Image (cartoon, rainbow, N blue to C red; front, side):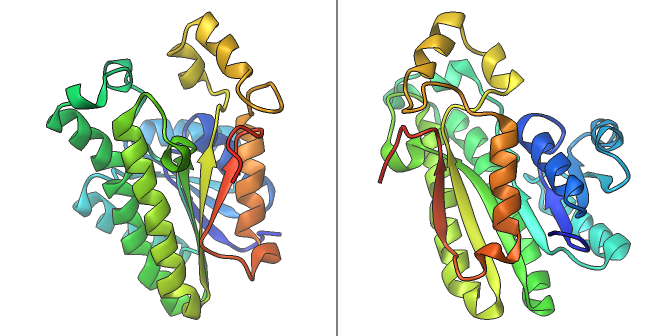
Length: 249
């Protein structure tokens, strides 16, 4: 159970982030629902219920991260669990470019959110967890980060960095009872994903996994909720593949 735990979920207003925030709240955690736009965060929090609390957060801004962490501590006393879900939105103009055609600006835009943003908020929260003597950091990556892919090089590079960050956090802070995990996701059926793909591409992706279907955001959310509990108290640094059996290692 997660009763009494204070959880921060970045990028929590739709898709996997929203499903995660709702699942954790349903398990009695106090959930901070984060978005760059406070009105959007407030709307999402209302949909989740009284255990959800909206907050403004831009992970690309050190000032925003600092202000956010101070406010959460002032309002709730601590941060027990951090779910790093915020990511650069899918951009077909970047995704479908050959790697040698990706500009420095395009690479930088993706890294600024996916990798640097994840590192920035994690760095800010870790001292709080060390001080309290416990904590869990769960970050979202993707299967191309561990298996490679023929498209989306900037995304794969950023997500691979998150895998490395997770291992560092696990090894450096394990003695402080802080655990770290990363989820490598396959095809998850969010509105944002479906809206960016053709019906033909969606159908083709369905055949990629052993289960021959897309995953649901709720399935990812339940995995995150499980990791956040003490049921995984002697596991840390793990890369957990959630892709229906596409990438096996």
